[in-house]
Image (cartoon, rainbow, N blue to C red):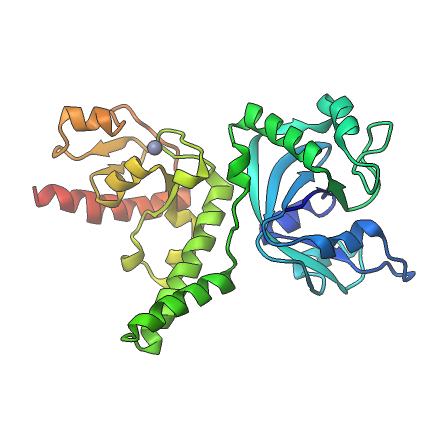
Length: 313
Ligand SMILES: [Zn+2]
């Protein structure tokens, strides 16, 4: 596994929302640079620390090996580079507390390598895009991230899977059963791909359980407010139709045993006894903030799901 640091100052917003890294092959004078060419060394599972205005605001994991790719549409407006380039699809993990590289510069300078290192001797970022990070520097950065944000190093050593891999997995899994026709297969594939994108989009937006604040992404569930089975395709992928919840709170919400009124105050099914409420970590005074768009879906959940479950008591 390799580690890198990318300076994303001009392109951060576009690359973040598109979920990728991109660099041109050469500038308009035909010159190439190691900080662009090094993109070719990024492989699936590699970790890339970013720098945006002097701070690490997210950590990226490469979803796939680098490939040749034209300048994405999102970067066209900036019109800074030539069209031919390299792209790495990446999962962005946001840091709630950004890390100031300056605060740790002495150690960083000691631990970074000699060749193609991100910072110069004066502690300023080198001019360019992608730089190499030694394993020693990566370990140091992981320690700071854990101290400030609670993410452990192991959380970044995952292999996020691409849409293509999800499709392959589903197809291989389905072949063994071989009872589904193509339409059904298609539906399942769409659901799986959509769901992984849906969770990523929601993670970037909310980052922790809406109710209790659990932030370890391994335990967070992207719950649909209006259930998947009742939603149309647009609603299924609409990030506003999502709540990020921990497993306990998801299981309550998904069964319609809790919901929220128009002020975001919790509604709890009377079928839950006091002990269950304590163990499941809910109480009558919980209130969450809902956007106007989330309210639309929550009304459905409340009226059709929560109230309905009351009637069947
Ligand atoms: Zn929770």
